[in-house]
Image 1 (spheres, helix red, strand yellow):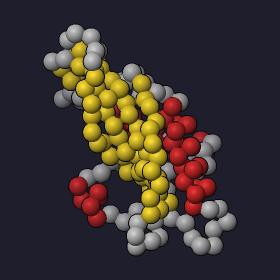
Image 2 (cartoon, rainbow, N blue to C red):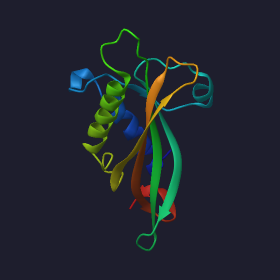
Image 3 (cartoon, rainbow, N blue to C red):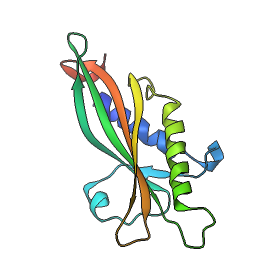
Length: 154
């Protein structure tokens, strides 16, 4: 069975985020996954675990018989800091954001499935119960398919 182009893009995004490791020269090792309904609602999150969630998409003007879309993803990386840490939580979140941006912009075509990748806003958050903070990064990926076939790149 064929894979839709958007699914190939999402899979490439997951591989890219999981390549953010200290062994590859980044500040930390991030372990990412895409959610299942159960994971999204109930899972506890460890330090440097990440969730790549597909959100809204926009249809753009493009050539005739071509579907041009921009798919947004939230790359959410959790950071669990202790009070005894020598590094501030803001520093950690800034490093996480910078590492994600650096890795994703190394291949903005998502292994040739996309036209471009844009890094949008980063939103820092803290759960009211405390203990877990993180950064949610908007990633917008523009791609094209044949108008009548979302399985075929245009």
